[in-house]
Length: 449
Image 1: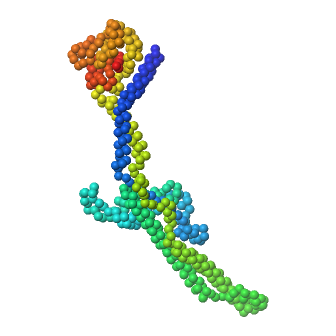
Image 2 (image 1 turned 120 degrees about the vertical axis):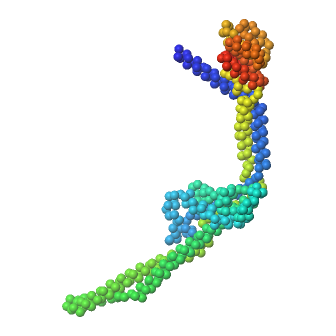
């Protein structure tokens, strides 16, 4: 018994699902002209926007940042150290360029860009004046505009772009950013090289002075002086004075040897510092160069090279939004139309009475003792109406809001509604259907004609 119930419930659910899907398909088909019209209008709006929206031009430049020492001679420079040391390789290019991104967005670069391009505060909507009108933009305001600084992932490349409605202005601003950033880099390199040279030169002069002092104060005798001291050594076994002379000679020798070692060390230090100083002079001469290599140079854009609005993008957006608005318009019309729609129908629906007449009549004939009322919102075709009148328990009632109609419904058993999509008034349909529900009457079919 339980299995039969479960089977019947499953059939009912499947039939209801099929009905819902069929209603959705029929509703969309019924609204096809509305959907096509809505789609075309939406697409045309996007096409019109493509022509009336102010165009914007985007200029871009790509900079390669060489992170090695300013001399660019890492392989032969004996004291060059890569910035960040080994940590640079461990942290990756993105982290290493954080400082560069801060430098390029710093006031020392941006303030010059603002003044070179005469970027000043203007009236709001060109009408309302403020206290800032005529003043140069701040760095913060400039960075809030359509300017973008991006480190391309996994590389030492920084991409700069600026977009506005004047192509020449976009080009000038990007060109100005690149120029002032490179100039700041040269200044930093120059200060660094001068600082390095000053330190090395100071150490060199100090070491050279120490060497001179050591040479002047050198005492002792050279080691060759001991080669002829054999007789003195032999005599020291018998003479105390010979022993004293030999001891004094050895002391002088030790002093001379120590002085020689100190002088050699100082000379080596001076020589090493001299080599470093020579390279420091070379680096200073090269400091006017920059670690920045311009991979993509900004160039003046032509009239048709605008970045926004993009025709292809706007057409795709028009198609997508056209489909969405078309479906939304169909759904809205289905629920709020003043005529009957598929969304307003119940579960048991006869979509085509001619094709489904056998199913419909069989349901009527299976309950010959129960009175059946056919509420006619619309007229049934004459050939089918004649067949239905031959069934004894069937009563035909005209759908209208009158006391007689209410009394007829009260005397009815099961009820069949005869309606027509896009023709039957929706308000009348809902009122009568609610009345039937209040009377606890069962609507066994809704027939579409």
